[in-house]
Length: 259
Ligand SMILES: Cc1cc2nc3c(=O)[nH]c(=O)nc-3n(C[C@H](O)[C@H](O)[C@H](O)COP(=O)(O)O)c2cc1C
Image (cartoon, rainbow, N blue to C red; front, side, top):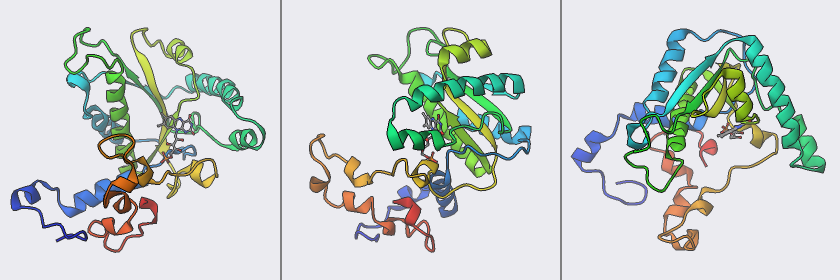
């Protein structure tokens, strides 16, 4: 019986659960994944890079279209060009804020383009197999969603390998296309900086810097219809903020980073 008094899993359901060590490992990777902007210069072995690319390639995709490609960028001249593009775009981004918020924005380090061991562009080719796609009717962006899943896979795989990943979106796709010769039919989705790091912070860098906070998960729950919020959700809204839900997975853990 669990903490809420629910009966234990039936044996066949139990056999489908992965062993505790593996479940713990996956949750650890999820909670310890961080967006990184400071990197060590150490090279990333090709075997490690190959593993995280294969992990990305095993993401789900609409109609199994696998719409992604990966451009591995090691060339320093190209990276310096991207850094210049970033610097320009960062000023545009700063223009969205005023006063202290703007000062704070400008004080943040938001990329590691040149310092990281390598950069990686993940792209999406929506019409890879022609216009007919199983699973694509009214939602035009389904291949983009698929590509984002590949990126999250890569991000988590990188974390278990001890590799930092930093996503840089303060860039312009049309210029990236020019710099890297990306065809018109292909959309750059993520510009990633990848490399080893000294340590991974427990909390998002933007949280520690006082830029934003994690939203309370209970406030994001709706029940049956949008307007039925936490107050009408029974036990679940309380549970998503209760560290005790983690005690089977992390019996001696510090739960403070999981709320
Ligand atoms: C689509 C996307 C674009 C992002 N762009 C940037 C960026 O340009 N610069 C940056 O420093 N972080 C960027 N980030 C990282 C976020 O700031 C980061 O994910 C967030 O602060 C939460 O921190 P965490 O990833 O460590 O949990 C981006 C993340 C995503 C998913």
